[in-house]
Image (cartoon, rainbow, N blue to C red):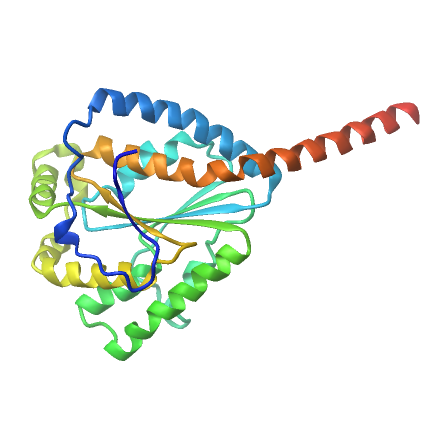
Length: 276
């Protein structure tokens, strides 16, 4: 696998400007697409075992700047999964009801049940990103949230959730191309949002906010994977690889559980037949 930046130690320094947003030189697009297809078949099979065994669940967190490709990743990677047992939640501006609770209340409600995938398109991390950059809450408040986030994710892990967090890393130049593309392409015009251009004026502030968020919330059991996202096809491949590799070690245990269930159900069926 190509070298990808993975953060799994809390307070490990990260400098996004030092990490490439482009695929490694020599990476072949055609080969990548074929690999993605193969990963899709394996991922579908792993999901089937996950669903049947009901021993674990999977949480995928997608974070990134505007146009980084959160929706595209959901379409091309999550789209490889069986829709049964998959939920996708997009977290926007909190509602009045959500504001009346702690910042994790609206998040925890969408955590995955055992056997299922939950995909977060943006997430609890907005509460240490947007609120920081736009000064929506006091610094003393959002700084405390890093610890709350680590504890929350640790709680999920302790109850069998496989937590995977992806930062879709896009360059300022590529983002501008995509924003302009929305204006020029009729079918994408509905995505136009003046706020996206306004946020570009805070590029450095967001960089600083992301760097601290990534550093302060990376743990061994809930790591951050920084995904070069200037090329959509490479972004999709990296995410699919990471998810598949994270699930592979569980295959044997899931299969063992299903074999035990199958043996028991066969015995129950034989007993029923004899008792007719």
